[in-house]
Length: 413
Ligand code: RNT
Ligand code: ZN
Image (cartoon, helix red, strand yellow):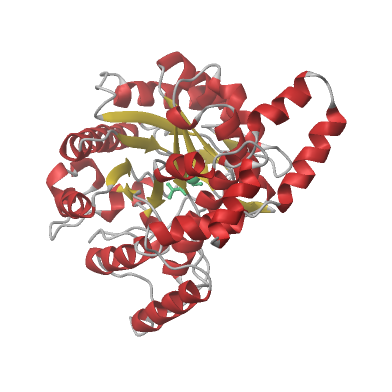
């Protein structure tokens, strides 16, 4: 008997088939955010200030300085992560010797990424970049009072959407095009509704023409506040929840974009009754939207359990959104993606029917005994089996692979 055979039996004793869990996990693609690899800097020749309140902190050696370095780092990272995943690109990560402004980006500026994704067997997702640009320095873009500035950003949004659709065509898997804008106000505004009307009109101008959902999915991302926009964020949760419902597009829930005591896992089932598609930005806020690398902690476990128990995996895209520049950036990716997968595996290994039956009978004692006893099951052994089958390292081998790669990139300037 191998350790896995024993674990398989331990779960079978609870009525859980570990093989079903492993094949379900194999089918879940995580959208890996390109911006962890270079501290959200991007590769535009014309580069503005960082802006938008989302600057990474830290100066660990090894930041990717070019698309080639970023791709090399991603290839290494993906070789340490079981399964097939997606890459989530931002518009500012264009790969071209040209210097198009944001309102002039074209598909060809991203084609090297598409070719690379095809070779890797990865899908792509996309984001227009509404920050780090002189026309966003006031933290106003799609809701700017000046129509000329709004039009500039609307053009950027339209082009991004078209690029995403063409990525979807090329790779045969719909690319999510997620819109997040930093728009807001540092001090108490007097024209809140006007700002929100302008944002709504700009979004309508961008997403007005319906595109085939097999090519791309529109998503909008809400936020509570950011540095420099403490008093009001135009695209608040209520704003975008309503907008996504009205326009039948995807809603993006970022785990760092709510009050720290709100339970983001709880929101999934609530919004799922009103929107068809959900995008997650799995992140770890510490006191604020700090975007720490995700741990295998209660918030992630709860999120994964809601996805599995609410049968929401089929209409939720799981994207990650964190950036830590104080540690190895490749290690950050690998740790974060694997933690998301471990959380999903744990949820898939729970005896769901039995737990729900106890709850339906209002037998809360049994529910509590079960949830606590189930924590002792050998999840780690099933995870190790998954890694072995996918031919990726775990434990001490992973630690040394990460350290070795980090030392190979530490000399980058
Ligand atoms: C910012 C949002 C947004 C960004 C990325 C880089 O608060 O979370 O998703 O992190 O677009
Ligand atoms: Zn986000």
